[in-house]
Image (cartoon, rainbow, N blue to C red):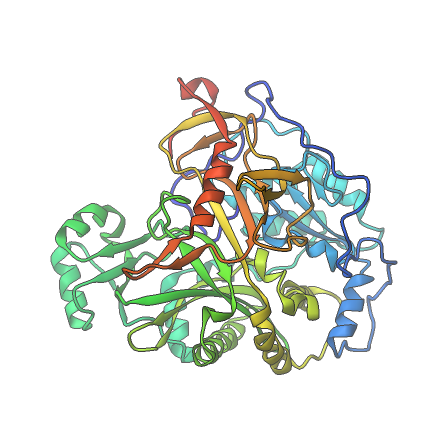
Length: 538
């Protein structure tokens, strides 16, 4: 699962294994010869014990060498390896422990337990805690960890139970405290901290309303006009963002808003962009800016729901980029005062009418946008953004010129054109899959049809817009329902265009790719959900 936001309001179906006979198809094996080298693969480098070194790392070359010869195992744990897939190219000893194995055991650095009895998970935290408790996983981590070394563990979603498990098992959870992250995850808290840091949000009022009349009064008193966006403190990919311009809109959403602490905002003509950053002891490293794919009905059933990103030179003008970078750095400094360190993602809103740049939302975690952040020209010229996060939690000192890094990455931004789409089930169905597309590299043939080329470890080898990488999440034997994450498609080039009527629309190529992938999924209806463990339509 990709999970850009947290606290989904309804349970998610996480696996169908264990109750019905397995219908798993076997992926074509990976080729005997390794993938073409990109000059960064750290898997075969010799280890060097770095612990206790007194000399600080002072430049990117030394940082690259440190990770290329790293001797401490680093495990990324999650439903899928999507967020940080490919980081093993830079970090020796980096591997993935996942619930879903899209390669069926063929990926040399992805481990998934073989025994997964059927059960439902409410969220990503439950999946990760299940994995940490799993005997197969613990045995794998033990085999992969040299004696006397505490392995490092990273993940997107975790809670206090995760912290307790890691403490008991002797793992270092290399993330900020769960309690701090939960507090910062609130849109109400983010807005307040942003205001204190000089990183303001779209004109808004933080309030609590009981009915339509009180909503109107609150908006009028704050000078917010008559067209609004309402957000509750915690949301999952747009599920708790509501657009209200009439009493009819209120009636539709009131059950989710009434009596809740809310952020009531003026609705603006905005360009939403996403950016990832890392708070380090040397300052905040700001990654490349990306546009977001949001609410496209071909990809997600949720209006306002995040469903992908694009990275290209013209995302922001130089002046907008300067304003947005300064906003992120100010927010990073304020978060650091709260004790936060490491990776975070920010949604920034550019008012196209006034050119003001506003803070949108904070995601205090590894982000779903990381997939293409880690293949930028800046990443290949220096190191991927996430490695600055790792530095904060490794036993090594460093003294880097963050301002110089940020300046260089801005200059390199024009070299990158990448896009990704999170493909969810949009139909109101509950089906068991009997066929699904393989994970790997695809291409458009001479007739324009999308064809499977070969199994692949990640998307780093894509060369042009005729190629794409698809990471399958649900496969044969699993269930799909409205809102389920089917998979992720990564490609070169753009996937959305500016619409003549304002806003944006998916390109013809994007729609063709979506349709082509969906055609490869085949399911059979579930007649009686109760007989297979209470599967419900979401």
